Length: 294
Length: 133
Image (tube, rainbow over all chains, first blue to last red; front, side, top):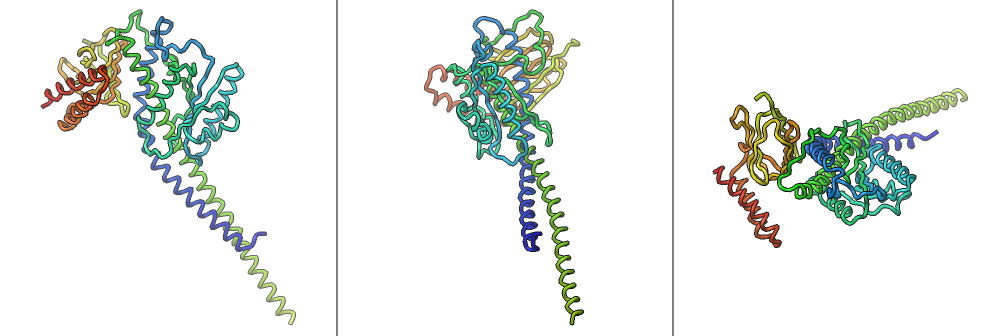
């Protein structure tokens, strides 16, 4: 049976924890609004970009001399997984669900005898994966300290992926991230970045009725410019979706934590009052029986 | 003239327009071209210039686009612009700033090829500036 003083201390400590979680929830809520707006505003562009590129990919598929970013390197032996997570924890299952999906994929690929490498975006993903797969993590890109994700953050990552692909370091690149659906729902998503997957957006490529695209200027020139940009746009989308999902996940996790702390305070307060009453009753009994004895 | 073109104008930061229109004049890299319903499939990169939306043979809306890509498939025209601003919201000093930036690009360019491209861009911007003022 804890003493009255112990109970009082515990109530105070839970109260200060509750203040922290409450504050974190409110900070996440205000960040969420901005992140959500940014993510939703960027969606049409990346969706349509994907559609345009997908249509082009379906068109040149199987043709001689198609750009490598479109047609692939002709093999699918070496896989690069880009695992995009948050920089910080305390956001519910956000980081662990991404890590779990990535792990399942790694095991699948390994069973098929493929080579796997990992590139982490965000510290938490590396922390979750490094014990089991530390030897295949090639690098971690940290985005700590960036308040608002801009296209400028996506470009170096995309450039790096393009350079690695040009240097023939991998054949297929897949990215893992959370798609923001709503505050309480974020869906772990797996998207193939390189080579472009024509069926990725679930839409059948448009039927050209046998017609061929006209290109202005030349096909190769447009594709040479468009494909690397598409990678950058998709990476940008991943970062934005992740930022919004992280804040959403943190907000609901902190909301839960605040409510749990409230329940705990109620329970402890009840226990505290009961023990205090018991002490008073005991003292009264002692006094009365003492007076009787005289 | 019953057929319409489904026209989408998007930039990385937002969806500017999505509507059914009669004709769109796109500033292609190798010259302006008009897109009507039933246009052959085409993919073209854009140069800085004015994108015009036509309704009943009259221009109804004009956008300044700084570059990007246009794709026409079936009856759907998708313009992926790096940046697009309705001409009505375009400010003269904003334009002057762009011209200055482009001038700097030309001066900073070390590569002949890059310099030629920057010069081309600057010329386009100057043209637009003249039309506006």
